[in-house]
Figure (cartoon, rainbow, N blue to C red):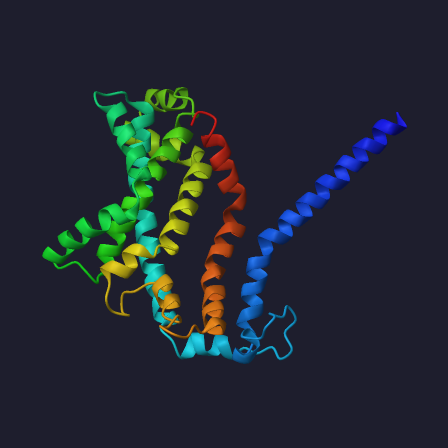
Amino acid sequence: MNQKTGGLKTRMLFSYLFLLVLVIFSLFPALWMFITSIKTSSENFTIPPRLIVENPTIANYSRVIFESQIPRAFLNSVIVTICATALTLVVAILAGYGFSRYKFRGSRLLSSGLLYGQMMPGVVIIIPLYMVFSKIHLTDTYLSLIIADLAITVPMSVIMLRSFLETIPKELEEAAKIDGCSNLGALVRIILPVSLPGIIAVSVYAFLNIWEEFLFALNLTNSDTVRTLPIAINNFSGEFVIDWGAMMGASMVVSVPVLLVFLLCNKFFVKGLSDGSVKG
């Protein structure tokens, strides 16, 4: 009995040590990013690199906020992300509900098309999108970025919500229809409140993909009035010199909304993914 207890304790000890190493390995990049952002230029180029900062400074954050395009790019990212995420939700809710409740001719083909659309990389569609937007004079506008972002968020969002909605009993809608609700009324009054965890999971997924999107923002915009945060951060990297302090400071600023979203929606996000995976 003592041997079994000792073996169990040993296994638990190694498990906790492994988890501790995994946590350190996961958090170290963020820690190093913060350390680099408060170093002076001379300290950032010290060989070997130092983990302890001798002369911490906020000069990099000052340059990021007051002497760069980061504030404007932050506003652009907020506008594009909110609009694209809202449109993604509208399309995903309606399409996911349709796929989960109605079997029609071609539904399997459309479902497969969603999967293929999710597998398709952005580089495949960037040239056709650019040509179309150029002809209709949509390049270098918020609308072009929003439409392009929908192409990368809608397929997976529909798949996620369809899987989640399939776990909701149809009897709930039938009872609502008996009470006089239409299909749309049942969706709004019954299905959406029950689907809140799945909707939040899709919202977080869309938010993260749109917030960090780089390819479309690089190719569909050519002025700082529309360009988003990933492009503004990339501007700290020159042909011969990289301003590591300012780049890491800007990266810390960009990370704040992502951290807030995860802190606020973490419980619903995990529940939405786990519940949606039951039938997915």
